[in-house]
Image: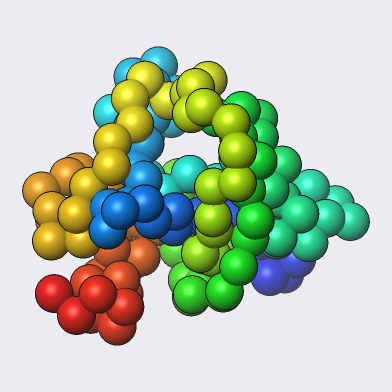
Length: 136
């Protein structure tokens, strides 16, 4: 079996407001429940990562967003499922943040990211942001 053809592709958004970043905590009943993450989701067939991220932010938070600069990607495995994560900066355009897939959202300073229990894939993003983007 070709592992690359079974690679699940997912996206994540780094949304910044007033120097703080949006993070969201997965519901306790979800896989990886209680872990913090940057919001996003699975790319559907025929969808670009940017289209996916715009759709996911609308579905998960009820907001309109503009997807911007590509930040990084990483490959990892959860429960024997290989995944590739594509991370983009995104800008909140309009709408109030009302989480549907998370039990809590927070706006945190880049220096505070290490205090949160992130999912494995998102830890890679945290390290990249701290080192290359915010230099903390």
